[in-house]
Image (cartoon, rainbow, N blue to C red; front, side, top):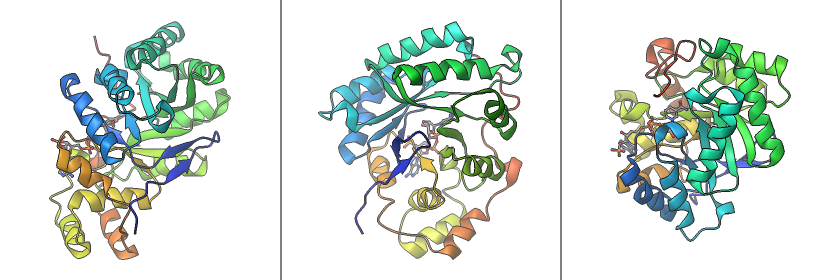
Length: 283
Ligand SMILES: NC(=O)c1ccc[n+]([C@@H]2O[C@H](COP(=O)([O-])OP(=O)(O)OC[C@H]3O[C@@H](n4cnc5c(N)ncnc54)[C@H](OP(=O)(O)O)[C@@H]3O)[C@@H](O)[C@H]2O)c1
């Protein structure tokens, strides 16, 4: 079975590679090398954010990779301090100029921040619609949006987000939001897909891994992709970057899938902040 990364259709006619490489918590000084390594291995999708402080290094790694710009799918996100429309426009310019790119494949609102800006993420979203009309963002989406936030966009905005990037891993299935996404043709992107390593010692995960002759990280990532979600595990360790890439040359049967899904702890399994309350604005 060849290890081919599927391109998944988005609701706007574009496609996205189902596996990418995440760069949250990679120091700028380490980012060029890590992204270069990922591109050499065969990753063609990089997930960054203004908040991560390494957009410039992601851009440099793509530019110096020897690949055409169009061969690599690049995502970035609007930082929390810039939700007001004019600030969002300026922040998007900064993102493009840090990346040294004329367009980005996917641009997201990083957090809905319902307790800030009078809860008005709709006017922020309308600015992302502008970026898409201008062709500077090929696709647009949201991150950490709960069902109520998505319902407001559906009622008040024109464009349905192409993706919703949310926390999902075996300990936190996030089923309510995933189900809304699925019913409304919004692709779910699963962030912290291996719960930053915390699910890898789980006895069920270890047992499934032993049964299929793969590593715990590979079976958890495989579980995500068989559920249809997009993943972009982060690693600065060359051997792990390679390991996480090899998830399309084996399959989990229904029993293995159900055993991993059965680890869901609901809200108690959430590792990151709750989007209904999160209000961090970097200074
Ligand atoms: N939209 C959002 O709000 C949001 C929030 C969080 C994350 N994200 C995105 O999602 C991406 C992934 O999430 P994440 O970085 O939080 O966590 P993650 O990918 O679930 O886990 C990363 C951690 O697991 C370790 N690791 C990676 N591969 C491994 C393997 N094969 N075996 C053992 N350990 C392994 C890494 O260590 P080493 O690096 O030391 O190898 C790192 O400590 C981020 O990089 C970012 O792009 C988005």
